[in-house]
Length: 133
Image (cartoon, rainbow, N blue to C red):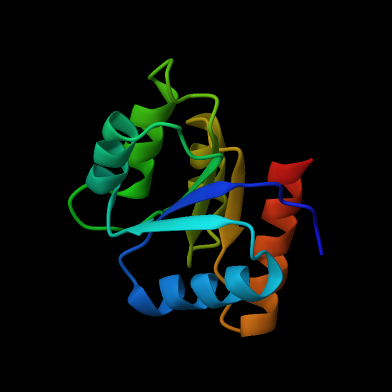
């Protein structure tokens, strides 16, 4: 288990099952993390504008209604107040062009959502290790 001090993670995902899996994993493995879940990129930006302190990391699903992950990523990385927040793209896609585009737009990490819980857990543990190091 990794030391997580007191981290705040903002997750934007319109898939309730994926959000629930992430909540379960974090509560079991990283009980010190505060998890805030919103349904789309527009809600991410509303949260960032209202709340202080800022989250330590943002996990963005790529395919969401209203404002998708790439639109939200562009907005985050173009704003001096938010661009230093670690931003992780999470998607079912493994398209290398999409992955390269996300990195070009400023993503810090790109995770392809695994279909298996243990693989899902491993992918997020690796991301959290990067956030905490």
